[in-house]
Image 1 (cartoon, helix red, strand yellow):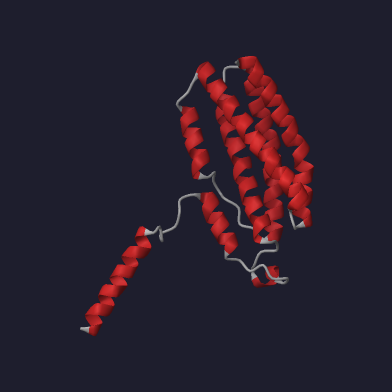
Image 2 (cartoon, helix red, strand yellow):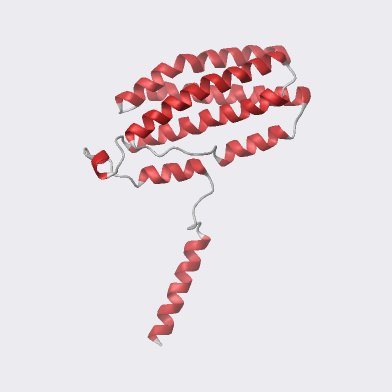
Length: 196
């Protein structure tokens, strides 16, 4: 009887684990945050396979990488679907500028042993799927709206890290990238006024 109860308890535990998402998330951003959270952050962290920054800095890097990848992917879509010349020009700038910043962040993350997402998060995938259903002026307006919202969020995110990041190199990266993000925000807000 004890053996039957033990087997039943194991089966129930396995079902509970599976129903709580024990198989893992499909969200690359969440998976990266989770991987970083489990890494050692001691002073000799890199020697032990850990992470060389505090968890807040790692979370910042994951969010920045996710945002940067989303900007590139959405802008690649805009390069093919946008009809407004200024929107197409802005999209090309996004691919170039965010692509370069993404590479710098990947190099920095590698040096700090920070796991970054490999694809954009689920929310950004939904935004992309929504944009793919639009065309013409509707697409242009929707893309511009997303870029304005995302750049406002990115400027706030990078300003915070430029002041509060504990790791000097992450703080420097945020500080160095911030003027470009601000210029992107200004440019897309100007485009937004022109297409309303």
